[in-house]
Length: 110
Image (cartoon, rainbow, N blue to C red):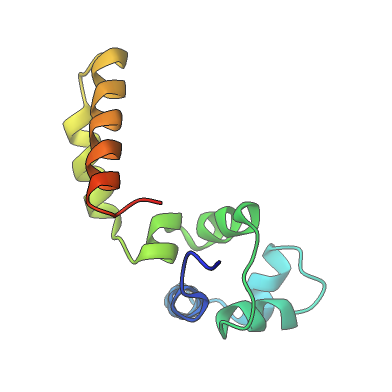
């Protein structure tokens, strides 16, 4: 079962890499790939990468994993963080559970 579109994620990676002015060889080297072929395969949507590697890619490209996976811009994350500001741990947990339940009921979450 596939949870996300590898081609779309790869395209976002490629676009972001280019915006950052990195070549495939440069990004592959930063990710400790022995050659740029693995990165090419990910960017072309031929293969996926591990969650750990996706997190590393997002960090190097200075974007969120949400952006790579879902196309969600960081501004939305900032908005949510502002909503959580000055909330107690209990209030924050309650909001997360509420959002999770709403997402599940709407079929947005697995």
